[in-house]
Length: 460
Image 1 (spheres, rainbow, N blue to C red):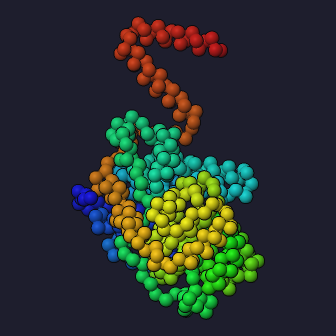
Image 2: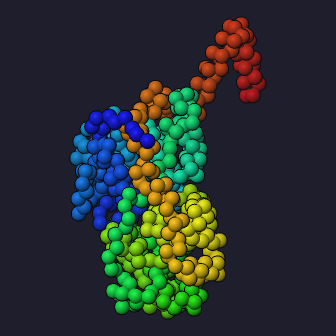
Image 3: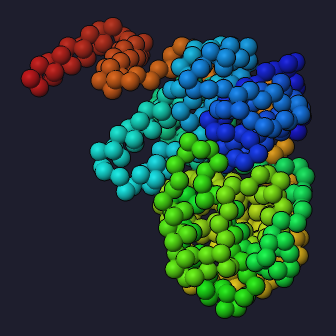
C-alpha cells in the first residue's frame, strides 16, 4: 500500500517513559514507531530525561516535567502530536495547539491499576481509580485519531468513546466504520533478524553449552504470574536437568518506577525451592543488544498471567519479541496472544495458574528442537513487522484531518456531570421540538408543550 505524502509533515511523539539503551514497553514502542515512520515524516521523539541513544533519521528530544517550555516551543512547530497516558495533564498547553492529536490507547491503565493497587486501602484505590478515569476521559475528549493494540481493545475503546460522546453524528457521518477515528496499531518487530553474540550459554559458568534456556523476557509485574512457573520448575528439571530459567526486569529501567511486589515474591519462591542462582536466574533490564542476544540463545519464551480483566485487553511486548526471534511460546489462556499461538501453532497455551499444565507443556517444548518451529514463523514476518503494523498511523499522519466533531466545535466533555446532564437534556428537548414543528406543525408543538407542562406540575 502506498501513501500520498505531505511534504515535511512534522510528527512529535511524546513518550511518558524513558527511551534509552535499557527501556520498558512504552519506550520500545515509541522508538520503533519513530523508526518505522521516519521514511515518510519528519519525526521527533521526546522522552523524559536524557538519552545515550543516537538514531539515524530521528530527532531525540529530552524533556523535563518541571520545565515544560522547551517542549511547548517544539510542539508549537509540529503538525501531528502523538500522546498517551497522563501527558495532557502534565502539559496542559497541548490541549489547545493547532496540531492534530493522535492518542495512543494501547495500554489500558485504568484496568492495569485495578490489579496493581488491589492490596492498598480502599479509599486510596478509589482515589487512584477516579484519577485514572479522569485522565482517560481527558485524553478521549481531545483526540483527533485514536490507536489501540488489537481488535479486542478497539471494542473496549469504542465503548469508552461512545460514553464520552465522541461517537456522534459528526464522527459517524464522516466515516460509518469509525476507522478514521480509531484503528489498530499494535506492537510489531523490526524488519530485520535479531543479532546474536555470546551472552550466557558457554559464557556464564552456570550455563553450559548444552543448557536449555527458558526466558521470562520482560518485567515481573504484579498482574502477571511468574509464581506458577517457579512452582512448576522442579518438575521441568526432573526431565531436563540442563534447563535454566532466566527472568528479566526485576526492576523497571525507569528509576522513578517502584519495584513490584511480585518480583520479590518470585525471588523468595526461587530461594525456597533452592534454585535461585543454580538453575533460576534474575537479571536487571538488559540493553537492546544483550536482549537480542538472549532471545537468540533461548529455547522457549514464557508469558503467564492470572485470569482478570487486564489480561483480556492487554498486548504483551515480550511475546512479540519471542515471535521476532522465532521462539516457541508458552502462554496462559485468555489474552490475545494465545489466539496467535493457537492459530500459527508456535507453542503451547495453558490454563491460567495451572502448575501441572505449565510443567507438562515446558517439558514437551524443551523436548522439541527449536528448528522444528521455524516454518511456522515464516508468515509472521509480514504480519507483525513494524512497517506493516504502523500503516494506519502513517495513513492518518499523511492524509488525516481533525476529528469531525472537534472541527465543528460541538464535541464537549464537561467535568461536571450535572452540567453535562442539563446541557444534554436541553439540546435533546430543542431537537425534539424542531422535529415536531417540521413534521406536525406549530399547533401540535404548542399542544405537546402544554401537556408536558401539566405533567411536570403533577410530579411536584
